[in-house]
Length: 202
Image (cartoon, rainbow, N blue to C red; front, side):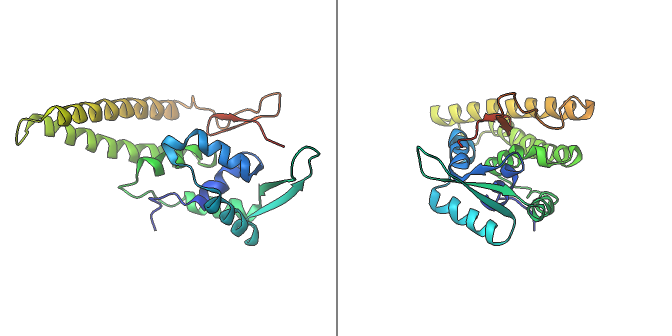
């Protein structure tokens, strides 16, 4: 089955490959990217974490604190890595949403360069099709577009063009081998998750 919609289950496993995290850490990280990938509520996140633990895909350590309630820190297991890699090996759906694309992109450290390249190339083909449809819409309008339609078309062309330029640059960097295999941890112990520095809260 094509993975067109990124399940929160796999996304959480992917984040945990970067570093152990608490549910609060995951929520805080997603909140910073909510405009791109959404921001799941605790009512959806914590059941996922419980299910992953019951399936032995993650372990949990309770870390006591003098100033606040104990923290539950989740760590991915070997079985969790296997499940994640099996999912990553599935092709994305041809009509995958921007949200699904970005969520997979945030898990780039879990992809081989070949798989990441295929993911980006698929998105480029999708973006080129969208860009071409917008251009054709401007060239052969059935009626003169009103102001709102014109602004929407212009906006879409700018977004599509910018995305295609970024995809071309990134694909070139992958081919040249100029993208790092993984981010280095900072001296302070903070890790980069999807390119964003995240300091553990415990």
